[in-house]
Amino acid sequence: MNSAQTTTVNDLPLGPGVGLLVSNQDGLVALDKPVGVMSHPNKRGDSNRSLLNAKYDYDSEMYTWEFGDITHRAWLINRLDSPTSGVILIALNGALSTTIKQLFSKHKVNKVYYALVQNTPRVSVGAWNDTMKKDVYPGKSVVSGGQRVPAKARYQVMQAPSGVFAVSLLKLKPLTGRTHQLRVQCKNHGHPIVGDRTYGNFAFNREVVAATAEKRMMLHSGESTIRYTFKGKLRDFHAIAQLPKAFEAVLRFRPGLNAGSSQTPPASLSKAPRSVLQGRRFKQ
Image (tube, rainbow, N blue to C red; front, side, top):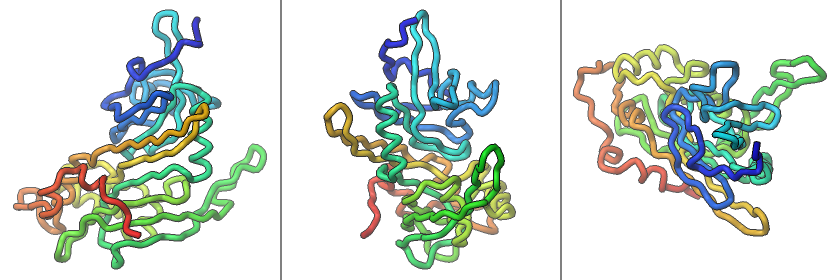
């Protein structure tokens, strides 16, 4: 087999509902992952509901598939939880993957998320500086929550309907990369993410589902921005994934009203395209 064959974006066996957002000449690719799709298969039989419908090697973090006598490869750069939608990155060559992963490890990739949360922060723009428990692996054993690590994020209220309503749209920028970081921090600061089945308000989630029929977790990876050097050339890479329509439906939700009630979206959201939200920057 010719393993040196260059893979292009047209060769990618995209998983169900996965869309191409943007790619560049180096082979860096941003995909739009739908809710429910896995970043990579966790067990045999998961390939048909993963980011790519292909074999996955956990050691190299690489997808492989064959077409004729050609072996194609794509390296997974970052991950999103299955209930989270939006921007996810892959690379079409191993050297580029290593370069971008090093930037992730140094927190030099600008990532922006959007979340629908219960309640509204009293301060519209701020930062969360917390500690989280992290599992440690001494030898072959596992100590659950054996280490405490810093978790930092910035937030901005993007949409908070006037009056006493229970759902707000937050823009979130993680400054550290902890497992489930934003989900845990939102919960700990009194703003659980709507639809979160692990850290959310379960009674409130049931009320939202009954009123809107939207069962997903309302967390979306909206933007990724990277400046990197590869083969002596400086590149800027930016990808945007539009807010899912499910967010609009849940933003109409009013506690205590049933699905048949006349619920109207907040004026600023109903008059503006979803892309306007992604274009706004954190206030300094």
